[in-house]
Length: 183
Image (cartoon, rainbow, N blue to C red):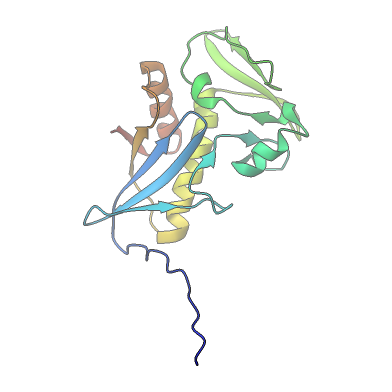
């Protein structure tokens, strides 16, 4: 009798991309690419996850996003920013969460998030932090396909975005030099 070995076969990635989409839930985001026939492929993050937690930690030289940042929160909450979809959806810094180790404030007319970093306390606008997730998604596509997408579709799952949130997504796209299209 022969022994048979069963191996899982993952989808083969397309060679010709037609478009890319970032899907945002309140606490996670996913990167999806489509081939010329419209078939979709979900790209995993560096932790092997299809849904990346929307957490950013500033405990390393470069910002860390995803699962590692979420795990850092337990040890160093003042270095971790989360609830970014909520922070990008408001026009006043009048919301609070006792779990936040960072501060949400208004500097003149600009909303900012103040967090600890290796270089001390820093401030950033919500759209700038959102752009870090765009960079992550764009890099996933570039590493897999050697291609930079000029346009990214944005889909919201589980909530309806307001205009403030959409404007922050457009600002984040501009920071990463990519056109944002809402679907």
